[in-house]
Length: 249
Ligand code: 5GP
Image (tube, rainbow, N blue to C red; front, side, top):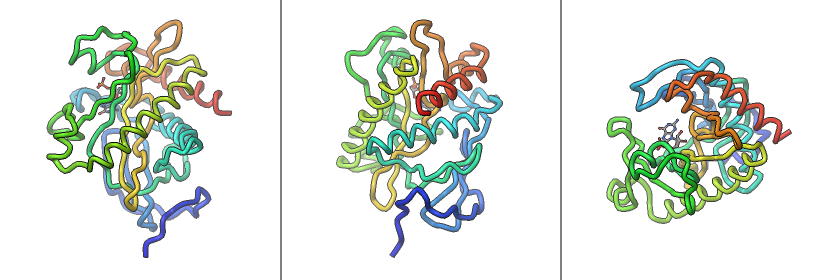
């Protein structure tokens, strides 16, 4: 029988060979088949890797912010893949079979929503808008619906109900958390996976995957500074780490 990892004070397993390299992270196997190490890089890409660059120190910041937010969510009974922060750039996580849907949730119109619907950037949405995007680089992560998910065999109706519910809950928790740090949570993307049949929140939650606007000034404190060449990208990431750390200490 395979043993499930349940405790945070699990012995740190030995880092093994690289099993995957994505745009912002690498994954390494460990000598425990249930656990992998997620390593955060400074590489930045946008527009499906048509734009490439480096944000110095981003990997360290995203690792730390993600670790803090996963811990905050776990305390609120949201099951995540997070196990332990290992170093500046590495976290130990539970191995997931990734559900190939990017869950996007929006509170204020920006980016893709503005492009697809014409709702002006900055419009407060009546209620959170949830979108499914098919996780496919070849197809440019297209917007899909539950019929597409069923047809492609991506997940069951039951799993998607659970994922919707978890996404909405994470949105409420994070919106309230960031408000305390004087930040509006505009929108963000989550990914989920299966671990011994249970749905867990995976991937990362960071300025790479969220839009953060400073309350009062509207200053963008996220990857849009890189996407749109707004300057001082590193400063924005550092500011977000400072605000999250302050509110959690
Ligand atoms: P949009 O659809 O407006 O481009 O993105 C909505 C939100 O989800 C933004 O906060 C954006 O950062 C995040 N997001 C959506 N898709 C991706 C993706 O492929 N990579 C990253 N890093 N973030 C994404």
